[in-house]
Image (tube, rainbow, N blue to C red; front, side, top):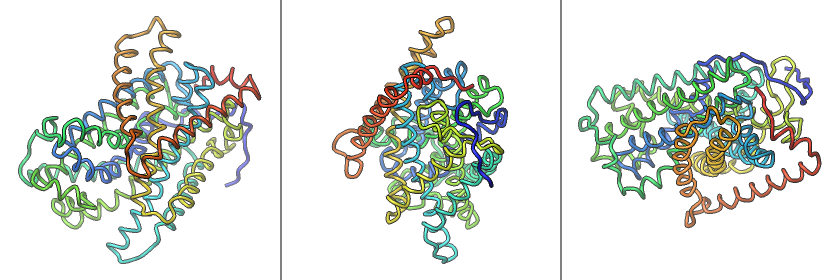
Amino acid sequence: MSVAPDRAVGASLQRNQLSLLHVVVSTLANVGPAQGVFFAIAFLAATMGFSTPFGMILAAIAILTVGNTLAEFSKEIPSAGSFVTFVSRTFGAHAGITLAVIVSVGYIIAISGVALEIGGWVSAVLAQNAHINVPWQIITIVSVLVISYLTVRGVKISSQWAVVLFFTEAIVLLVLSLSVLFHGGAQGLSATPLMPTAISGGLKSLGLAFPLLVFSFVGWENSGALAEETTNPRRNIPRAVYWAIAVVAVLYVLSSYAAIVGYGAMHLKTLANDPAPFNTLAQRYLGPVGVYLIDFIGFTSLFACVIAAANSQSRIIFHAGREGLLPRTFGLVHPKTHTPWVALLSYLGVVLALIVVVGWNMQPLAFYADMGSLGTIPIVVMYIVANVALPVWFWRERRASFSWLRHVVVPAIGLVVMLWSFWSLVAPGQPAPFNAFPYIVLALVVLSLGYSVWLGRKDRTVLDVASQTLAE
């Protein structure tokens, strides 16, 4: 594919490429419910016990409060910059530039763990089922290169891939869950897992589990950055937000419930110590074919997640480059495919660099956990700042349509919950390397703020444009 850049200033993405279905399913693929529940269920069972599905319900409600923020902003100023645009319009360019940098870095760090785990998952499956030893490094590099090709080729093409892959994982998850329910689980069905009364360790255990629960939903905001390429974005982006959160919540609650009752209350410790609990469930309730299906959707979920994340998150970088918040090279658009090719290849290039430099000699699951935890901190910061911005902007700019419920009460609830989750991620006394992560993010914030100050002194007009940017 030849690459000849458009100019950054005024460059635009191709409009009306994505329908509501494309955006919803691309968002669901970005969340990756199969890989989310596969990697989380053992820890959640160990911390929350029989009430793990209740924890999923709480997390979904918390995410809905932030989803309300994205939906309300998108009705008024739909933008490829998503939360960065909203914060810039509310608190000015310095806040927007700082957020653009830290959240872009956070997304890249978080998705690097998912990209690496593609190789880790496939390598383990090949070794176990076919006795073929292929280093995960080779599989990961090839996967990232294929994803790079698909995403640069076109948002509609890559989103269609994400649609097919997501429906594959959703169908298998539903089949397994319904099979467990049909068989009555290990010890019969019960409503207890959906109640708070069965939480092992009470509020303390919920506090330990909540950051992972929030991380499991990261990617729900995918739709916001696809606004420029979506038909009727003022209408479809808010709808996509709520539909995506609702669908992934149902999949998470149903899958976690099936896992809990599939093992039974007397065997939760076995579940917590099982390295592949959903393989065990599939073997028990679907037979050998079920195990192969779980192995397959583990791959499709990871692969689709990276495709959807690259499409969405690179557009935040593209938007920041186009508006001058980042170097304008990031705002270049491919003349044939109308994709932000520099932002896309830079995003995936840094992901690959992190894998090679940091993760090359690590165990895939360890890298996945470390990068997920570190990358989630700036993302939660973004949720917090956006929830503060919503009432401020609507009171100042849209007083006639201001709603105390939608613009104050709901974001206030989300703010409290996200602050709690943030504290759980940065609280002192955590084991290494997690105890270093808050300081890494703090250094990133300071450097990003310093960059915004330098940029403003270099070219004041950039700040004026950035603080009022609107890319609809």
